[in-house]
Length: 107
Image 1: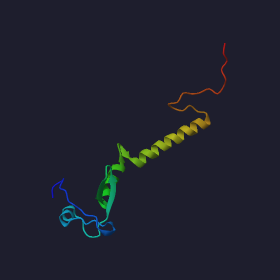
Image 2: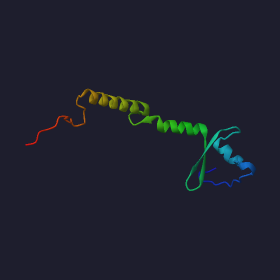
Image 3: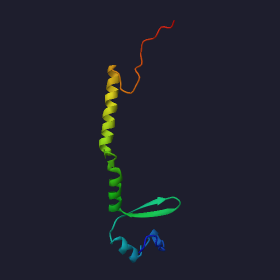
Image 4: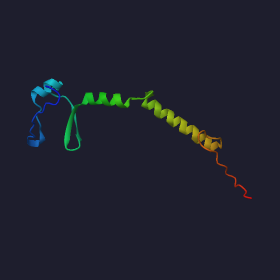
């Protein structure tokens, strides 16, 4: 089977669709395999092997540039908490201008 080959599938009673044997063999889809279906516009149905989908998503979400997405999120939250603590204590916050709470006198 070459990439781009097309197969005609028929929706049977109760919505069942049979995947042709040649296609199943070439993709390694065995009886009992779990597939995930999602819709892409305009009117496309995409079937993916569940294990392959999970592996793909782990690869794209698992790492952010320079480290893991979780570590990046934790670092951002720690920095935000430090800014909030500094503001609450009246200390200068890096990257923010200090605002005086005293009224200024005008000439």
